[in-house]
Length: 485
Image (cartoon, rainbow, N blue to C red):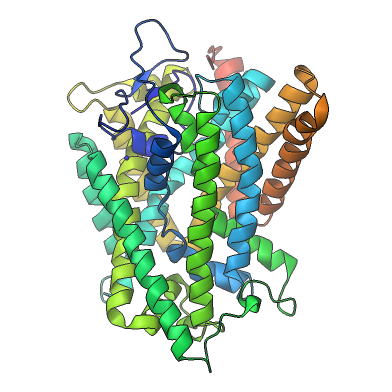
């Protein structure tokens, strides 16, 4: 789960998988290189259809990811996790529109970092890239924790920290030796996730039908006015949105698309809708099986696995837990490890990070110094999260702070660029696409951002302050030229 990487931009969420995706018959892509714009001699194969991009997007997005955070979303939303995922979809839907617009204006780019730099200048662009780093740097520790908790639900005698380091070692070895995950393996993993989801839905429906006294298909499992509380619901959304934040991956495929101006945005829309259906379906069935949450009382981290066990027995619990562990702790983690290294590599090339991060290893075709740094940082963060008592849901929200912040910047960029700079204001379409939708997107994402909780807000704000100070030192004290493309 290859792409051209902007020399001074950062990789979007989807580059984590493209860095290890080899050429294949369905969609030929190139090895990761560094370029701000397409230059003569670049070997882009414009062969990707909307279908190709949707399939690839689903591979990167983990269709069963709600299983990992179901308990936390259930608890925060007052037993309405389905509603939280629907609101999360609405939030990213407006950002999908904004991505589509910016792709049309900057078809050779695929990064919020790049869009913000062009619209607002170097300093805001740097902060956008810095916030992307927050999401990326926390992500490895997050997926290790998700995978470890999934296995811990079956093997409680093994400490979660030990399991985290087990997954970390596997991913570190793969990253250091430069092994590439074959596209066919990724497709098999996608099919396996869909099979797991289908099994859960089938046995879940059977369980609800056979247990009318305790289970039901009531619409109150989606929205219950008696239990609805705005603050709690938005907190749940700030956790649920984790499953959506990678849709911008499609933007990185722009130069390989047959229709670079419209294809990626259509693929993003289709993918967002498909994922929403899958996420809502699994959450709704889970809530119908156990509307009160009695099956996982006091253990929200393993909530979905407990519901699966209730629906069909221990075997389904094991299948769901192993599926989540492998999807997050191996496939997603390997891809993230590589993409984060390339984020740091490209920022180092642009003068944003120390030069030693910009060294490319010829044997592994990867920035080895950056890889080693990420491995070391992942060890530190894993220890910090575990020893400080920061739970998985808070770690997810810290990562989401970075993603939601950049989505706010993306939507504001569309308004400033199209409505004010280009003055594209004629007609109803311009009003909706260049003003109303991005305004709603920025507002909703900002509202969710404010609901991530005290710990995530403090960490995010401190990270921004550090970024501003770092930028000032680079540009004012060290007099370094920051080249953002």
